[in-house]
Length: 326
Image (cartoon, rainbow, N blue to C red):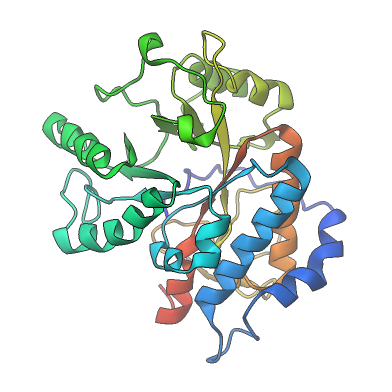
């Protein structure tokens, strides 16, 4: 997981959960977990959670609402999980696993592509985000993605800028993306701290010719408006673009709208340990009904703003619980 740089500002206290509460019993029944003890099937619980998110999102926004889990590729071996995915996001497939600008070990690449290639065969939109800067390595990442049928993007680790890496689409590449299969390139930028305002951020992204953009639904404490999202849905020449909202479902972030004063490890009970690599991010018991209610309210906010789908991070949080911690 590579979440956005956290804002020093705390999110406003969580509003009372309304529509999400009616689904608590339903969601809890969907999960395959008990109380998080030794008999918990953490992988099945994550699959159930993603399926519940997909059902809720598509019930509200329609069958075309995109569901893109990031990482956690082992779960895609299950046909029921694969069926609800529009596609997937995958980090460090060719570069970045052992450090920025470092080639990912061949055995790791082989394992990942072994899960990802069948997704391409199944007609899924498979995206790769590598982390490298050397021009030859950047070119190699894009070439390898193309050879596998993946959509590649080479980024900086903080995902806080529109990178000019020699593979930026122009007006000559522009075409309508009326369906997910029309997407040929994408932009991944979820930290907006380098932009002076929400408008400055939206204008910068809107000026590009990417077919798909993955962004945060918020700029600092304020949610992006429907008008801003609708602007992002078209390229400068008026052709259709797809817009995904980033949402972490396996970790809680203390800079989000839902975070309340006094929260921390063990309070509320669904919050587990703080991620040592990303201060302010906490592992969560993602099968917990209260946490799922928060995510459903988050999803409703994303839907109401008009996003085309969600990009779900920390899918691989099951590994944290299987391994007994960070």
